[in-house]
Amino acid sequence: MIALAEAMPAERYDFKATPPQRTFGEQLAHLAEAHVRMLRPLDPGGRVPAPGETFEIDGLEVEVLEAERRRIHRVRIRRKLPQAIT
Image (tube, rainbow, N blue to C red; front, side, top):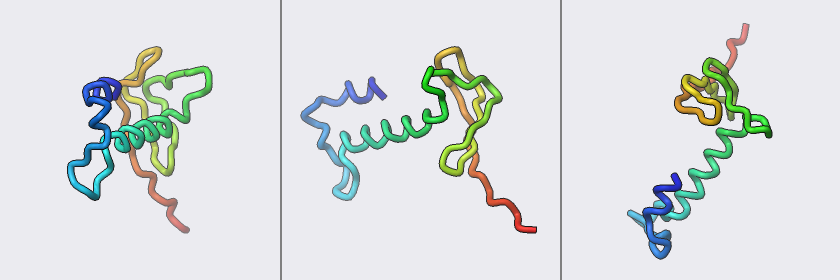
């Protein structure tokens, strides 16, 4: 995401492909917020979940598929279905 932000000249951050879309700068802010939300389950010490660990975010189940000591490489995200009423 940093490379993307640096590739666009600052004076073009107000670019929109079409009027109803967000500007480039607004899209970057939206992506940053989404990344923060996705990383919320990590503890304040910066622990990266190990492969096979799962956690929930906003009704989604996230399973870590590949990770290193300091970076998550791949995850699987599934929508959690409501529990059946019996």
